[in-house]
Every structure is written in C-alpha cells, then in structure tokens.
Figure 1 (cartoon, one colour):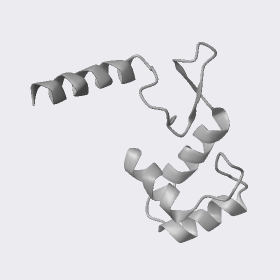
Figure 2: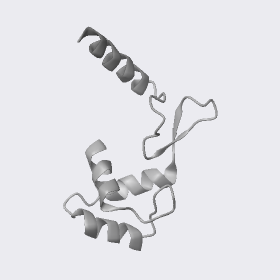
Figure 3: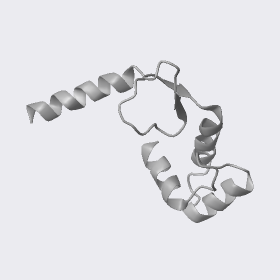
Length: 91
C-alpha cells in the first residue's frame, strides 16, 4: 500500500510540472523539444473544446458533427464514439 501511495504522489508531482509520465501523450498535447515536457497542440486543443461545447450530445451524433466541422484524430481519421467517450472521461 505504501509503495502505491508513493507512486501515486510521484506521478501527481510530475503531472503538476507538465512532465511526461507515460509513453502515450494526452490528447491535446505534443512532446516538447526536450523530450520530457508537454506542449499544447492548438488543433487538438480546439477539438477537445468542441467536445466540451456539446456535453448533452450523444457520442455518435457528436462524432458526426466533429467530422462535419473538419476535426480529425491524430491519425487523420474522423473521431470514433469510443475516443470521444475517453476524451469526455478525462475532462
């Protein structure tokens, strides 16, 4: 239990500093030139704001709306309902 608590505290500290804690970058951020810090990605930030702007819309219509507005995921594909659900959960 103590190891888990220390690990959780260490990861929270790194997050607060804006440092990378996983091999997966959070959506809306890119890796800075130093290879450790995170920088906001304006296009991805705009997509997350568009998702937050429609909290009452269900996932499939939201995916269709974002595709219509030209938003794409990192791979250049339209957002799937599953990726939008993860985006909503993470805030």
